[in-house]
Length: 214
Image (cartoon, rainbow, N blue to C red; front, top):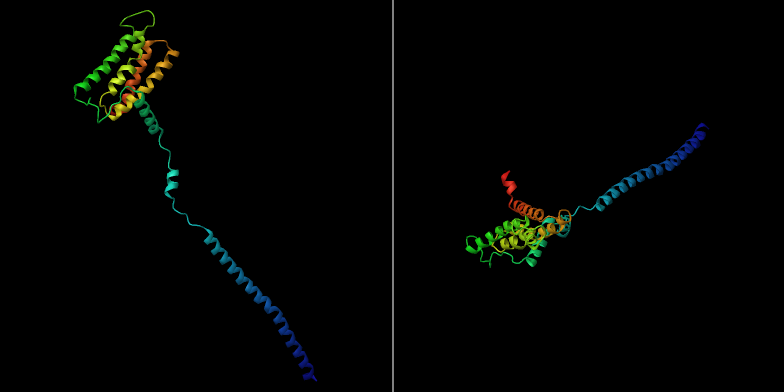
């Protein structure tokens, strides 16, 4: 009897054990599969994200050209001044066709004529020659002497590049001074003095006289 009673119990226990193990083992397996799946998903996501990150490409020549800084204002201003002076100035000095090269008599004549007209214009504007108590044509010519005679005479020579640039700037700057200054000081002498200061200041800038003295 004991053997008969224990046999069904033993069979029941055995029947229960596989059912519990059979119910629990899929869960363990599923958990393992899920863990592996999640790990694989993470790996795939990381690989996809890494593949989506594009490597920086080198800049093309066009982008470099566009990214470069604009040219300085000085270069553009030089072009405008040179073109304007060459168009409206009486004569521009050239290196190939100009006979007034340094060392020739024509070069010396133009140079003496330029600085002599400057001194004569100063004497006229200061009312030292043909003095008068009223404004007249002589004092007016003295005020404009640097622009009408000095600069054209010096530009007629075969001058250097720096001197030519200085004369081109002066050809455009002096008319502005002669028009603006009389609004504040109605004096021929002051206008001529301002033109003379601008003349030598432009030469000092283009030839670097101040840098050399330092």
